[in-house]
Image (cartoon, rainbow over all chains, first blue to last red; front, side):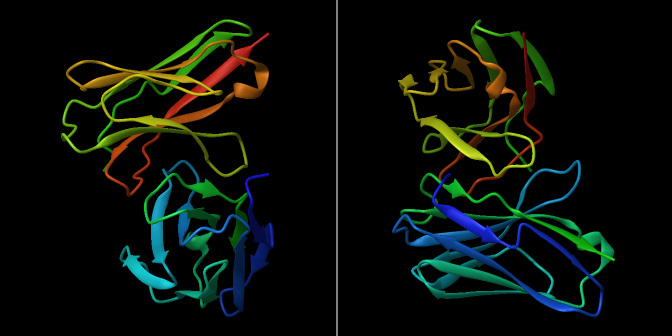
Amino acid sequence: ETGVTQTPRHLVMGMTNKKSLKCEQHLGHNAMYWYKQSAKKPLELMFVYSLEERVENNSVPSRFSPECPNSSHLFLHLHTLQPEDSALYLCASSRIQYDEQFFGPGTRLTVL
Amino acid sequence: DAKTTQPPSMDCAEGRAANLPCNHSTISGNEYVYWYRQIHSQGPQYIIHGLKNNETNEMASLIITEDRKSSTLILPHATLRDTAVYYCIVSVGKLIFGQGTELSVKP
């Protein structure tokens, strides 16, 4: 248990669906991150939020839309995804931006 | 791209020390060496990090060569639960993951 929770743990969606992934951290951290881990590929950093402001967007397609309403919660809104977007989506948090990161268990997403 | 080179896989006998090497010959003076691990189907877990000096915590020891071009993560008494992919990352903050080393601890 790292203090970072993610829901749902598994999600299957069609290409026309809209869904959201939720991340919550109970550590009092000020920075939160979304990563994508595709099969047989390294983790890729998608977004970074520091003090609820987005500070990094690593050329992620607009069909992925992050939201950070407060320092404890981070969402990833998904719409019109492609099958190649199927992956493990990991959330992480740190005390300050780019400090030691604590990861959640991930959401396993399958796009049909 | 990751700035480190790690062997793709290693085996270790349970109870023995696991020594995981990492080459980072292009490391900059202000970059730290971080180690994370990822047990199958879980999120990565922070292990340890260091700049110049060797570091030790309750999980592992980190040995960094004097020229800082390579390092070794040491798990002093490996258990079956240490089976995981171990990532060595050099960074001033942003984590760029490579393929890591898949460590298998065997009975």
